[in-house]
Length: 306
Ligand SMILES: Nc1ncnc2c1ncn2[C@@H]1O[C@H](COP(=O)(O)OP(=O)(O)OP(=O)(O)O)[C@@H](O)[C@H]1O
Image 1 (cartoon, rainbow, N blue to C red):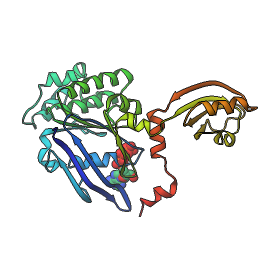
Image 2: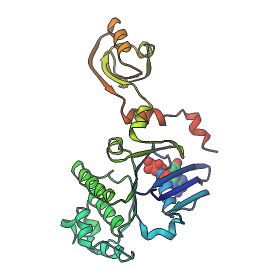
Image 3: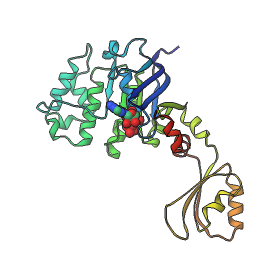
Image 4: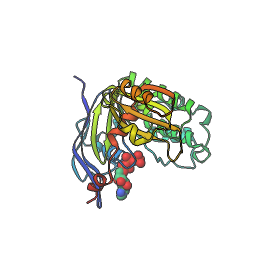
């Protein structure tokens, strides 16, 4: 049986009138790669910060390796969105310094290689680009050879090539049995990298499952096409669940239809007097599932603000 690495129960964090985290129950097992998805302000960073012991929960339980997060700091690495590093030191010196705090540490050259910073080893932090700073933050997260790694939006400032290199490094860590919890807004990445996705909205877990299970929630088809049909009549077609259109374009414009099955919609559209062209029919994507899961009316959002 894999060990439970992270466990939270009824975890809450309140800032004044805002329930940033409103009761999260989460269990992550050893060796799992879990993506945390959620819209802006959903509570992802606050949750990770409580798991790291950087923020005190308002109430609830948070355990890492069965202990208080601060008691197991040496087994945990974190790549956060804002990492401060001493500006007068070089990249290699900072890696060496941070590594010295851990009982067991990886050699600096190995960390620089894994973080793709060999060429920047003698540069100071102030000379690094945004993407290089992110890679330094990754290097500092892994220098203590942690069993559990938190990555908070790790690839937000990386270009396509750096992203690929980054996930290759992470997959090397998962091959070693490390546990990874990462937050992201990049749904394609979550789909490709994570074996499990936890969707958080308004401080609560609203879905927890494999990417396939989440996509299956919106099982059906996505139809992309250009038409001059009014939105209201498209909505009334058989099996249509959702319609989006490019804002404000007059006449024929691209629209996206989500439907249980494609055939009845296509039948009705082609039988209508409206123009239909540039048609693409695809499976529902994680993006569509995410939008459907997390979309919320203003009154529900208000409920969270007491
Ligand atoms: N120190 C703070 N003081 C007051 N409110 C805060 C504080 N930190 C976070 N919040 C609020 O808590 C809520 C959750 O914020 P959090 O940063 O955890 O969200 P997130 O899911 O990480 O968002 P994003 O995707 O934008 O990074 C937001 O409404 C935010 O404004």
